[in-house]
Amino acid sequence: MLITRKTDKKNAVDIKDSRHFKLFLPVFCLLICSFIAFANQVTITPIIESSTHLSAVEKHGQLSIIKGQLVNQYQQDVSLAGPSLYWSNNGWAGEDFYQKEVIDNIKSQWQASIVRAAMGADNEGSYLTHPKDNLERVETVIEAAIENGLYIIVDWHSHHAENHTSQAIKFFQYIAKKYGHLPNIIYEIYNEPLQDTDWHSVIKPYSEKVIAAIRAIDKNNIILVGSQSWSQDVDISAKNPISGFENLAYTLHFYAGTHKADLRAKAQIALDAGLALFVSEWGTVAADGNGSVDYQETEKWLAFMRENKLSHCSWSLSQKEEGASIFTPTASVLGPWSDNDLTENGKYLKQIIQNWGY
Ligand code: CA
Image 1 (cartoon, rainbow, N blue to C red):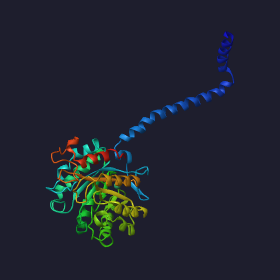
Image 2: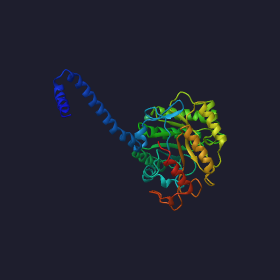
Image 3: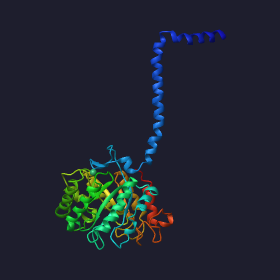
């Protein structure tokens, strides 16, 4: 036994001088290289895992629409989730929430990837009569969204946008010039046209003018287009879609307490026709903002949005005494918010957004 071991030792020493060493060296190097590569993979793994902690914009970058689907900078499908602010109008229920701290907490407490600034461009106290105040609020939340790496929808919140086309163009050109180089910005040019506002002769021509004005400055950020009947008749838009521009999506708005399978059928027609849909506003309650949470129907809508990888913003960051409000009347406006600050709707929406992922 001893002899054998000695012999082995000798052989081991002798091998250095042997011709076999010339073969052994490259094999050894290969093994070392493989080990280094493996070790690198091991260290890369946690980096990939930690990418889930990147902000939405750090992770996805510039968005675009390919074959009717919102995709990120790597052309991977994206589905974003977050809340919508309430109308920004002076003296209304939403203006107090247009604050940096609110956006900070939407990111840190709710893990939102997107937020919507619903700039009032209709009714009293709106941008049309109080441009400075409303613009200041919108810019406050745009800057906070940029700082937090959130996408932000800049929404012309109106039911009569075609009556103020030149103001809309002026506003969106200002936003495009100032922020259009950043991936964060998504333009929503017409919140909700009314039921008797015709897509073909009114909404589409309005949209084409505003889109052309934005595209003169910002060539690529996503533009959201409204459709007839409070942004529900996407099936009508699908019959006569806007051509000549890229990165357009059509808004689909629903309130689960009112809108059910019939509206999902309209949405399906639009999707089948190749339209990109974006749920820039939705609620768990009735369409007038009242009533209680319709859990059963909301779950059906959530499944529909998951299946079709739709992005969505839920109505709304407000303390107004109505079912759709996220906060109780006594809640801290700026946050951070405890569950006591949230309505039943607010608690449900928080959980939906937190669990959506991005
Ligand atoms: Ca751009």
